[in-house]
Image 1 (cartoon, one colour):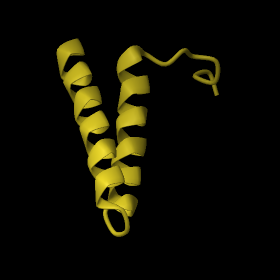
Image 2 (tube, one colour):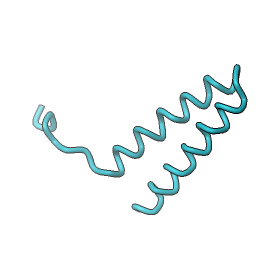
Image 3 (cartoon, helix red, strand yellow):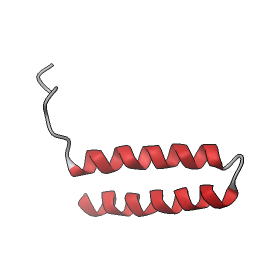
Image 4 (cartoon, one colour):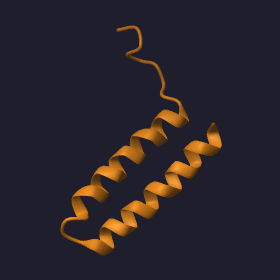
Length: 54
């Protein structure tokens, strides 16, 4: 309850975005290869940013 108004760190925000992109990539991989590849590349760029933060 005390963490209700706690701001998320930049790393936590990027991690959530990465997870969303990977989920979209997985679902698109079954139907649209080009769109899934674009989601994967976006997810990889987010992962690099997360690694740079440490």
